[in-house]
Amino acid sequence: DAENPPKPRIVLGGKHIRCETQVVDYNPTLFFIEPNYAQAEPGSVELPERLSVVKIVGNAVTGGDSSSAAASSNAGEGEVTEEGMMLKILSSIDSGERVPMEQIPDYDFRDGFEIIVEYQVQEDLIMHPDTARHLVFMDDGICYLIDDRVTNTAHGSAYRIMDKDFYTLLEELFQ
Image (cartoon, rainbow, N blue to C red; front, side, top):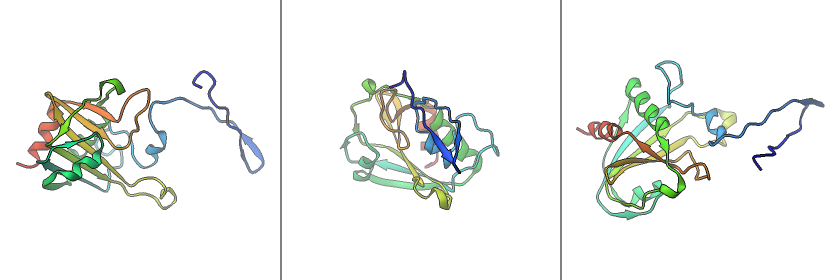
């Protein structure tokens, strides 16, 4: 209940620790391994260990999850190693506006990209996922990204509307 947030009682070594709660529209546990790149400057955040972009073409696949990309064919894969380009892609992803649940497009996936982001996970955080997969596609002239890190909630879906230049940027990686 948002009107009555939980009031956890945390005890460490027999002593109570004050804890304030805050309601957010994202999963804060992601930020242990993945910073918000939306406004990041070069050198201000740790970049992932690896970022790959897969170009997908071909078969029509109905559905809305990133696993549907597996039914299409891989037209090429490239690893992004230049830090400026990596930060540009990650910043664009985190800057994309989340689409409300009622506005999720009903699409027939044929072509697009899968962005695979691999993080180095510290030993004590091994329970967190070490890979994020994002599916990018165009539908009626609008570029969408399915954000693998975000779950559908009343506040928004895992879909993000991306700038059209983002799709062009990904296409240029394969020219």
